[in-house]
Image (spheres, rainbow, N blue to C red):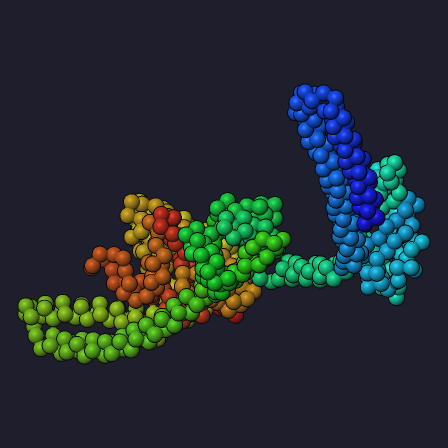
Length: 581
């Protein structure tokens, strides 16, 4: 560069010398002409000095322009050399990046490999050059990739993130992710590919671990004895459910999956769901949230609900676990009811004994007073009224003792069908003409060991209750049949349950007004009644309850408002037939 600048300056000096010489010659010529013709100088003075100015200007331009030109060319060359240095630095950085950089020629053979190949595969770059990528792969993978790569090279197109398996020098498998672009020379001829390989083994192992974990979760999810479901958080759209969930709510998979909480009508109260979701978003998880759900058929079930937010596919989802506590709550209610009835029975029995003792003293005193009076005495009439009241009090204590199972019974082997048929006339007359009495008695019913008068009183009390429930008439159906209990079953209407065995089941079903759940819960309690004051003591059903329990059986109630009431007496069968059979 400096030699070029020296040559340029030398050339400028030569040109300048010639220009000055020409100017000098012109000036000499002007002197000669001035001697011959003095007026000539005046005429050409302006032109002469214009020539001088032009000559001087030309000399200056001829000096400066080449210098500017050579300096400009030098700056461009300096910038080019700087860009080349930067390009070399970029190439060096590219070759030394965390990925393995490579080039292959048009035959598919490596012509370049960066040093990172040793970190990835254990080979030096020199050991790789001259091999094809497929030479480093397992046979099955090599066949697959060769076919796929042939389709790419046939179109001379770029490719990216092509996953493949390559063998390390020590034999273990390395998962790679390959990207590349085609190389063309100046004439446009295809010369191979240039690209990078990235080691994704750790990522693939993590993905495999996630898949394995998800598979274990899915297996546990489907096999869980608890009802489980996965849904979207906001609208409750069901994404998955296990077999127990489908069985609990009565849906098929096709009916449930993809439906929202509103479409499924699963939550009995959607406001309750809103509270659940709000707490879940706030706390991240919920345990033992009590809620009422509806089955496909509309039956209410009480559940303890647990919820957890989980991530599936990068999206937050809701994992729900349902624990059905409907039966447990029912058993707890029955237990509380039985315990309450036991306490009430003890109280009623103690009260009845004390009250009966008082009545005996009253009756004895009345008898003594009556013996001292003439039958025509007015006081005798008053005492007779008092005696009748004492007798009614005695019957009341009899009912209380029956409820508390402390009344003395006289059990006999009885044919229940014959006893019911013998009561039909009394029941029909008691109910009146507006109520139809229908019987459905199974033939050859087994015998039961009971107090026959106690059963008669129980049936009459139930019939009178049915009459009160049907003031405008209706139908009372009396049915009796066999019943075998394999295992202890839950009694309805708050009653306890009978042990396994054989029973005679006597059902009295009316078409009356029915009972509300609150009334049904207290129906067997002594002195509980829905009738007006003076229309009943409230001891009818409590006496039936006491008789059934003291006879070794149970009594249950089923009733709904507007759908009538069904009273079921279950009495254990006797061990032998009556002697007069």
